[in-house]
Image (cartoon, rainbow, N blue to C red; front, side, top):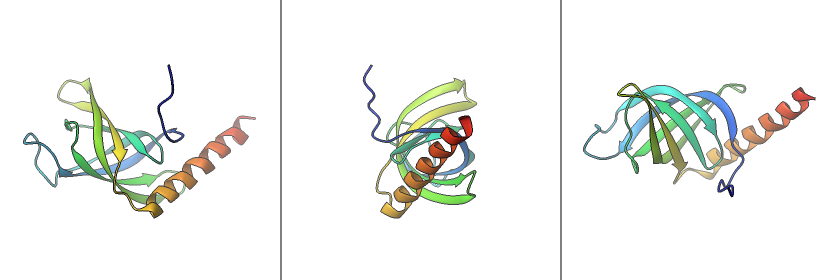
Length: 123
């Protein structure tokens, strides 16, 4: 199967505060969820949440990068949703949209640094 990702993905859990910016009729706007990401890239993230987030829901994600204790804020759109535990836990794929270049650059730098660190550490 051909890889469709545009950027390297780092499998790492980070704390995430998710704010619903806009969505369907099913969820209230300004809903704030504290959970975590499962992996991140400069173009998106896989997040876990306790609220069903319909496809095309617009989110603001405030991610606390573990190793450097840095907060990065991005805007993303839900591209897919998967039920982990019925009515309790969900995973969602989020594509970053309309995110400032500075935030994307910080993510790229962090991911690159972390991947290099993991290579050195595994030798």
